[in-house]
Length: 302
Image (cartoon, rainbow, N blue to C red):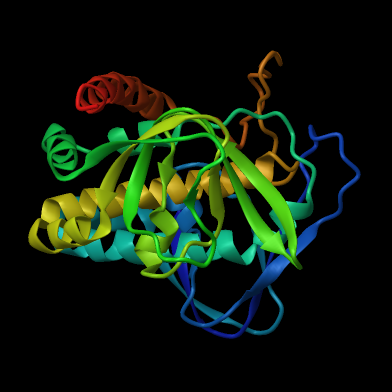
């Protein structure tokens, strides 16, 4: 689907995103920012194996390094150390893109497009041994309604998997609270602050009583250093989650290609921007069974 991954060597590029034809909103093409030398292009499509949602245009004479996606995929399968470093860098790049576009996402009207549970994307990549380690290294916690689980611009002590309940994601813009999304069972929480080793980029508030698996970030960091296979799979899973989250946020606001909505008939002549191929569908089906098992194990500890 996507032939090459690019790294800008010299020059300047501009990233834009167009409104979806199916959105039905009077929106204009949005300029998302400049691409500067050293930045990666195409990582969203590469890690998720789906259509691009951004258009990148050279605004001055530029030089890019083009990396064959087919050859890169082979290298990632053969070299786990390279894979761990590559997916860590891709995760950092994707988390920056999410944070850089927060203002646009906060002011745009949301459309009712249900996202795929992020944990299915992760559990499709993790192995059983990884899930057993996460359970052994984590705790199952319960939080009351109206409690703040993660506060914007403050340190995050753990990576969380939401088992039950709903959370609101919000940010502060000029002293005003802006809601970005509502998260439900199966979401990953705190991943951006972990991959960037910084403070939280948003506030997560419990809309009702919730239960989470809390994996302390110091234990996770140690495991990533000691276990190369786990590190490669973990960062790949986080990269896929962040790419999907970025795509979700834009599509829910009417940008980035046609998304299929619940109840809408499918047009088999179209390829939807949120469409998964058969291989991914099979993997997410297996991941669903893994998550059900993980859910039972985690809840049995409370």
